[in-house]
Length: 584
Ligand code: AMP
Picture 1 (cartoon, helix red, strand yellow):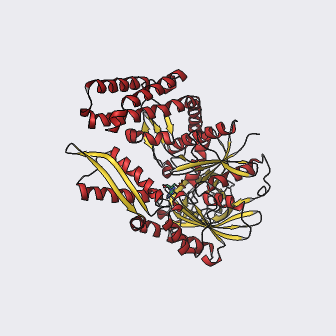
Picture 2: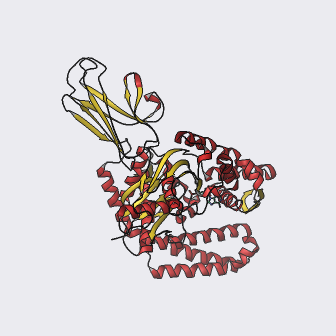
Picture 3: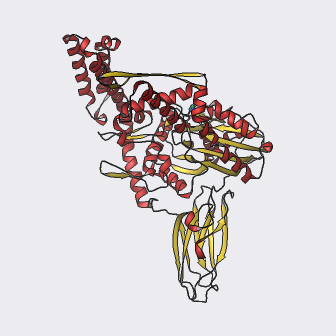
């Protein structure tokens, strides 16, 4: 029986894990990375790149590179590339397919079963879209689970039972806080809260803003129109932020960032941790409210928490850790890598659900997730009448009798809503259907039973039945943007068709982009310092450059091993020819 994997499909980075022995281990990607950037690019020569390969070419190909697709899940967002519309499900499926293929290379066997995690705040459509993405990627999605639940499961391996725990998850693009209870054979999510638009990217943006202002102030240079320079600043800002998690000062050094009046402009700045904390204080402060709300919803005070878990790369920021201490009065636990524990928990859950191998500690562990928002239907006067309260434990089944508002009304529209507001219009309508054939009667006489069934993936089925006539109508929530079965099947076929090509292209594309970067660096150096070379040397460099350009112009899917070794040799040759130039 093949192994089931756990996937943390993140906004910024994704991570895959599998249980080996009794331990969830992280599966490295083909470059050896333990997390993979959730970035997809469509190159002009028909390749689809995922991860670092996509990030590396993003500046040159920004309109065809997709970042943070997770933010668009469950919406009608589409991007048109080469005359074809791509949905968020399909873009996410491209990422999932790559993760699956990395897992297959690591395990040396085919992988189909997976558990995928989503933020606790994801609504129904976002969960359904994630499940569809998994299917398009050829995965059998055993379950969609909340990220904090998954992290807790990873911690559940090495913590005792009977504890109430707060999970504080600050990743690249989302913030989630959950209060959970770890029981003997049970992890129950008591409450969740969060902010879908708060994460490490915002911290990077603050450093970028600061650096651009410094550049304007000291060198009267504006980079707004220079995307290549901007992306270098962005990259350096993230790097500085990470360094500041361990040091008090970080240098941002970007020589030849841009040109002004024909002169090169260099950026050289020192960012102290104190200044960084000032620049980002309000972001850190924004995490307080959801913590208070989650505690209040769970009906507990911070004092009754046994533990606080830190999840997500951004919890490495010292000011964030300090904030958590201040909010909870507890020293947060960090004994599992915050970037990896969500995937590890998903792997444990995948193992448990697939039943391929009993896990000694968690084989019978049951997960109780909660619905993040209340579910209602619209009733007379545009009121949202609740059937399922937020933070109800899943799965849940609930029925209630409604009636008609007008005499001899023969049909009712069931408008299903998600949200906390009392009026229907203020909530999100996630599906509508009409129950026809209601028995003719005075207003208030017919008995219409409305049933909500919310499964363990958080996917909702709503049905309505006239108890007199037995007429029944139901929907599994489908937003306008939800893909039809036929569309999903098309997308699965399309993705499978690409799988064979992807394996071939992966290696070729990596080397292709390294070569392009080398050519760009040489070009840049030639334009800045070429005048200092004699004609012969310049000629040698341009010829080596031309040869490399010729070799990489071949489509990656048409390349074979000998093409790759020729490219490697040509890169080496260009490096040798331009060594003197680069040192000038
Ligand atoms: P995740 O979504 O959990 O992978 O978190 C990704 C975010 O964590 C990105 O914004 C990273 O820049 C950030 N991150 C990763 N490592 C560090 C670090 N050492 N210090 C601060 N932020 C980090």
